[in-house]
Image 1: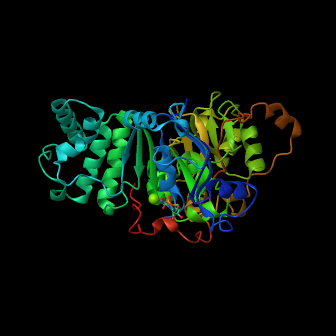
Image 2: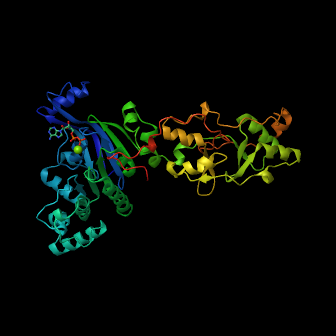
Length: 464
Ligand SMILES: Nc1ncnc2c1ncn2[C@@H]1O[C@H](COP(=O)(O)OP(=O)(O)O)[C@@H](O)[C@H]1O
Ligand SMILES: [Mg+2]
């Protein structure tokens, strides 16, 4: 059961809600029916799992606050249903609704909404007072939550004695003190200075790692969305344009609108090695003979191969010269010719920002390996560069491999190759494996390096 579930939810502000819904369903544009009412949310469907941070992102006026207010039960949908922990709140009477709101949902607002004449402690205890928790216990619990959000010792102060960031911590403590499963946050950090804002984001991520709340977080800031969201819903003109992980949205935007929206995001924080690694057939088993290797050099048009064992553990690389030498020396397997120096491995979750340095010095593509050193894929330098420039991996257009040296004669001893062909490992289906061998410097650097642009005042910078 999902914590929050919205099914074909609509909200129209105006005289004739149902008529607007009907006309838009029949194909009218929301602008055509604007005189009848404002369609703030149009046919929104999504589910939020327990423990998930679900971010709703969109420009101002796209319907985010309206959506969260329906989740909160403040506004009833014009059409469709909202379920909280399996219960349809759109069908509830006021008393029942109040109970669900009090027991299951807390909210953090952009402008803190603290009571000015109550102390910080009393503000933090507010939701507990509403829940009927005895006064002393409520104050004690409030103090604990103030501690948790870094405001230990501030309980006796008044809100106006605190900075904006601290006031929002009180807002957060108040919401957390209620100990509800669901936390709704509407632009909760948007009014804060960029630096404070980052601290709050980090704090939220840290708290979430132990509290595992269900969080619906609204923001118009894409970097914030990508940093916090397990999944993101992109809203446009009342509709949800796309729902997906930040990686989905970056790498597979559903339409031009989403693509344009995300083009300025700081990709280095979002993309990881696994999202840009490539398949390769330029791998060879250590038991293979030199002729198998030479045939692969020819077929793959590379001068280096990754060497793996029968369970795909990465042993090293072998280059064309070593294979020729092995053949000359009558070796039957490549194992003694495997080079282990100069090969750089990264984990699948390594952020893009940490791939530049190794990739810039690596002789061969970076190898992406799992925790057991099994080869998952490879990352040629050009893939790192092009992912930054949003050109998309374009190794096909570039001389991504070193041409064969002249002294390696392509072998045409059909029998020998057939005999050894079985040595060549079949890339296992489902395992994304490695890309081509050595790479040349791209002749022209890819254009438009967005990620090197500094943070704008509304974003969070490139350093994480
Ligand atoms: N109480 C209201 N009455 C009439 N129109 C409203 C009301 N609240 C929001 N709207 C309209 O609904 C649309 C979506 O607003 P909102 O949900 O606040 O967007 P966001 O939070 O994404 O900025 C806007 O066109 C806004 O003017
Ligand atoms: Mg809003």
